Image (cartoon, rainbow, N blue to C red; front, side):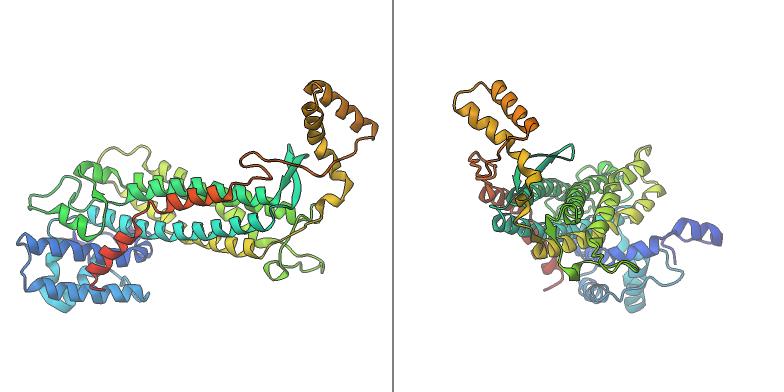
Length: 444
């Protein structure tokens, strides 16, 4: 069944090629297609395009289909082109011609735009929650090990004293910026395109404000042409937000792999979180962090993949946009999986509290000695030269009692301010209002 079918059949190979993986990808959107239809027909009844006796029957059946999708039992049958056709077919089987009325005033163009936005804002909500879980684990570890010193590196050379409080806290603060990016993507996503039809509006007196409120959107995409132009742009913007979170995790995963190696032995992963070798019985490999690194590096390509699909498209709808689903929709589950694994491992990770017992790290305290001499009145350049010559002569004695007090330093991590920053960003989302609107529409 095709919503556009007339009195001829499309060549089977052409159909296979043009449908592609759409039926598979549309399973991600099933719940949201139903939710959008519920809001749309409620609006249609209010403007007289649907009978008041028909609306309750259609809503009840749509709720049944929604429950089927929620249970993971929704299927797009063989020969059915997409999720929109499947939902309409299921309604028509149950309610006859009444089921065919739900498409008045919309096109598959704005229908899929709406589905994508409803799906994406839900996924962004879940990602924001997972980011917050990882953030909390990092802050807890930063506090737990804030007094444990470790080498800081530049050019992969031992440079200056750092601490595990700083290392864990740095990635926590990085997630604050990532969450801000995520919030911007969420706000751009949470605007209603429904009513733009094929991109040029409709002669029906649609009430777009009503569907906007029913679905809990912050506002609508007002200009109908821009609503259609937004397809691809939304995915690219969200892709950048996904990529920035993935970038933070990829860098942290690399650190963890490095620090877990025997040459460093800064951290230890619990044995149940590692894998072994088929021939080397001593091996405990940090495969989880290696896979997080690889998956997150792949996710950082997402905005570029979307950009390359939409880059040279003029105004209006084109079938090219269908391909975006294949890279975009599965990305959320992959990112959530990485966030969950990362939070789990960070919670279990153990820190070596005796790294600096090894005298090879003594030279990293040279800056502390230079600063001590400068504070006592010696010109900085003279102090620098003296300490450098002492190191060359092998007479340098490291004083490992350091006192850093400025904001964000070893002795003043400002974790409370970082937590306040994250909380402020997190509270800037409108998750509660969206959930309330959806539950009201579903009669929950």
